[in-house]
Amino acid sequence: MIDKKLIKRMDIVMIVIVLVLFLISLMMISSATHVTQNGLTRQVKMQAIAFFIGVVAVSMILFIDYNTFSNLKTSIYIGSILLLLAVYLPGIGKVQFGARSWINLGPVDLQPSEIVKIAFILSFAKFLEDRQNELNTFKELIPVGLYAAVPILLVLKEPDLGNALVFVVIFLGMTFASGLNYKIIGKGTIAGIISLPIVYKLMALHQRVRIDAYLNPADLDLPGNYHVMQSKIAIGSGQILGKGLYHGTQNNYNFLPVQESDFIFAVLVEEFGFVGGLIVLVLYFIFLYRMIKIAKNAKDVYGSLIVIGITSMFAFQIFENIGMTMGIMPVTGVTLPFLSYGGSSLLTNMIAIGIVLNIGMRRQKINF
Image (cartoon, rainbow, N blue to C red):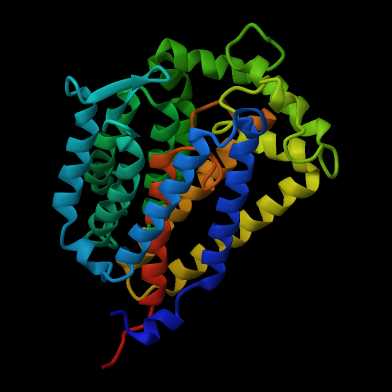
């Protein structure tokens, strides 16, 4: 049993926000998959099942002291690498949406990179904690960079640029929070900007095309730009209060690509307008604020770094997904947390929340 003192410290506000976002998700996925014509769709059922499994996972996680994960740092890291490599096993790995990012589990598919995000955060937090106050030179940063480079390169090879960027943001957020020297940050930023043309040249052709499309939004011949234009039309036509649930024309006539996942925010704003979109943004803002507060009040550096990593993950995915529907960010396959359809994504998000709640509950030492 969990001590009553721990239960009292549970962040109820965060739990309520996750529940509200999930209920909105079911509504929007049902609309995006046209339940009024097709009946209760597989996507709606799978999202509900994934959420239920996630609730069970959260309940189990709350019983475990999060410091247990620090003792398993090496095992978690090695297991993550093996899981990412499993997509190349014959009969198990599966190509979907143009990327070898999936494992076939029979009735469902698992995307290892989603689960590995959390595993990487848990192991990387301990790796950084062990190197506190030792990130003052580029030489000291080399092992830190190599530690993160392995999973990032494996995800990039699939190829999954969207999730690779999520890993990069997690790495940067956690490294910065661990006490990175400000001079290194300045020099690193300058070096990063200078190296952008080189990085662009090293990208795969389809990845460069995505960047070209982002830089030339008016060219509808470039892949993705037509869909972004349709997304903007959907968002703009929603006006203040929207067209009403199940009445979005861009949605009903399938002008939006992967509208139950990548462009779910466009579906939401078309049907619930500016007010609906603003409500979701406010929920996300409170959600991220509560996590930052938990990170600040964590009882140790390990717990704080874990929450910073998870906050970085959520913040980037929210900004990237909503940004791409408006044309201010390149189009990637990054999902909108708790709203987009996707069992692996939702389960990962639920596990992440379970860990954050766990750290928040144990922010003070319990005296028995």
